[in-house]
Structures are given as structure tokens and as C-alpha cells.
Length: 181
Image (cartoon, rainbow, N blue to C red; front, top):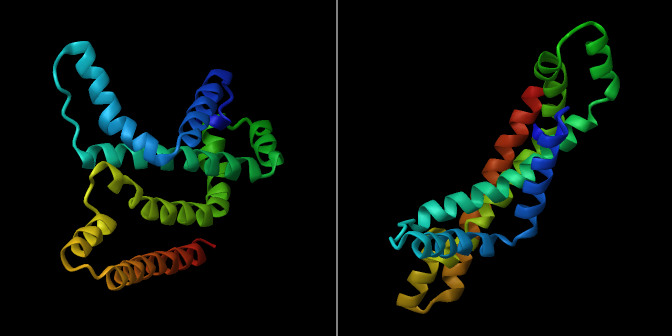
């Protein structure tokens, strides 16, 4: 919402956040949060800053998704014809109420497919945070392969798991999309 704010300072904050987070690969962001920030805090305070792999992975995935979602929201709001805002404002309706009652409902319909796509991408990106030691589906598969040396079977099973999960989520989203229309 900052990116479409009437205040230039909020738009600037949004632009910087999106540019920085989208400009850093997710694996680097996760490593920075998991190893870099605790190391920095320790060098300043002399005390270890405990941050576990789950928290670091969650923060990294959330920041990454937030940057992309911010652009989806900005694009969705800007896709609503400008005349909608002008007409509402000429009727004396406040900016906030116009956004809540007129612009956002229209923009949400436009944004929904992109939200679903972003959610699928975030789900797939969980494999990237396994690089910091977070044990998720991919990492679990690697552990099993280390025990039984059957990488073909394990990676095939992982691929099927992801395919089923993502297909179900996509179908659910399509139903939701139809209900909203």
C-alpha cells in the first residue's frame, strides 16, 4: 500500500524495500539472516544472538514474498481505471474509504491469480532455505538418500509430492477465483 500512497516518503520506502529485497537472491538473504546478522550482533555486543534455522528461513521467505507481493498489489491497484478514484473523490469520499470500498475490491479480482502464483513460488522456494540447514521436504529427501543411496526414487517421490501439493493449491485457488467473480 506504501507504493500507491499519496505521500512520496512512503512510496520511496516501498521502492527501496522492493529493490533491495528483490535484488538479493533468496539463498544469500537466508544466509545473511542466519549467519550474518547474528555474527554482526555478536561483534557489537559480545554475546551470541541465537537465531534458529526455522526463524531465519521464515524471515527470509517472508521478506522475499513481501517484496514480490508489494509489486503485485501496486500493479493491481494501478490497473483499476484512474477514473474510479476521480469519481469517488469528486463525490467527497475520503481517500481511505475510496481505497477500501472501491479500488481494492476491484484490484483484488485482478491480483488473485498473481497471489496464487506467488504462493506457489514461495512454496517452491522453501527448498532454497534448506541451504541454511532447515530440514524441509527437500532436505528430508537428501537425508533419506544419504541412508539408502536411491536418489532417483527419492527425487521422483519429492517431485510427485510437490506436484500434488501445488496442483491442489492451484485448483483451490481457481475455485476461489470463480467464486469471487
